[in-house]
Length: 543
Image 1 (cartoon, rainbow, N blue to C red):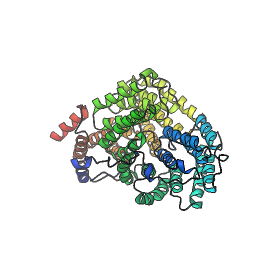
Image 2: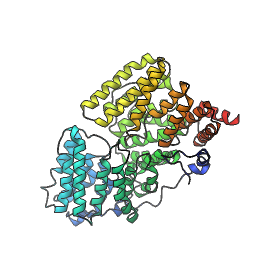
Image 3: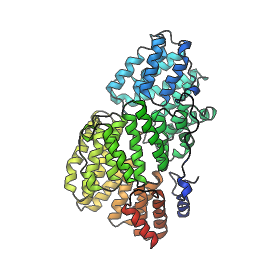
Image 4: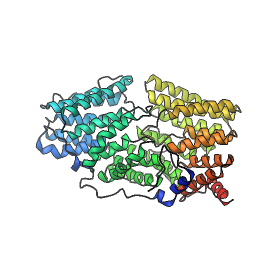
């Protein structure tokens, strides 16, 4: 299968080959599911707990490895009911309460629950020295309730798990949890990807030895969840869903890789299965909404707008209607509730529709910011720059809230959104050179970081928006460079391909314009809507 390398823009001829039908062929992810459907048969976690709970403990760890935290807690609580002296069951509950290690800054309630669980472990039964190492490591995660110490605490956890792994060289699970700890501390600003590659270096040899272990496949996807690394995760991504087919997150997780590489149909299918599994599990709306966000994003890239609209309507219904959406979900689910309707407007270039999105408070400042960014961008781009002011001001206030909460990552992300919106407002006000400088700086800032794991991508990539601004300002060659930079990072995005084709055509580069328009039509060959961009592509290629 030929594909576009995330960080290498192929020559034009290769681009045309890459968009041939085979480039978008779908691959079987299903395979033969293990009998327990959660992958526990490959998990061998040794404990001093009673022999009667051994299999259930392995199931609990398998659930942990696939981030099915509510079910993991139930499993570990059941173990304690049968063996009250099982100290490591408290360890399992604590890590489950901690939740997704890639979910960002942990708030007070999460820290409290994790600490309450792990504090019980040392005095439960008689944990072995190895078990005490695991317990003490988790204790590092909750050594302080100050959100500002989050980075230091996860760094201390990484160091502690490294020691557990060294002290117990035959403990495969220790190496796996250590690798996860390494990946958890990776900085989105580190473009050497040192931590990602270190984690992958631990996981890859183990995955070759144990190709059915769910944690290995899962964490390899996370380790390589960056534009220049994503292709390295394809084997694990295509394997993982078959290892734990009952778990919503296991079915969703391959789409992190598929999204990075622009494999939209594969992303749609695996997220469709994830959402269905989430409904079947009755585990709350969060997992379903997270899958629906990725599914919406993928539908919009292939111009299946009717299918995307159906997902938007379903997502709102899941949380009880638009007015209840903000309070109806948490974490990645809350992000999805805000992001899905915003994506639906922005990815279609429906600027007036974006400007009219209902603004409502959400459960965190960065989820609330999503709607205000979409509204501000929509107002500015639909010719009403004055209407963007209130939303831009709100973005500044939300940024300040995040700064006060010591959440450095989301402080920067929301400020980038504010800067992008302000640049388009400036452009709409007629100060084009000033706007270009503003948006170019915002794009540089976004390029220096990376998206959160809870999102398939930025609501609107700043570099891509920069390309459109340059194009509208009559600078097609500069615009083409911006679009091609976006295509390296986020291949097969509809608006990136269309922008690149339009810029190339305006610059008189017929070869590139032809190649990009052909790619656009190939990506959207199963569209359910005749977008104007597709009509323009056909017109250009027919001329």
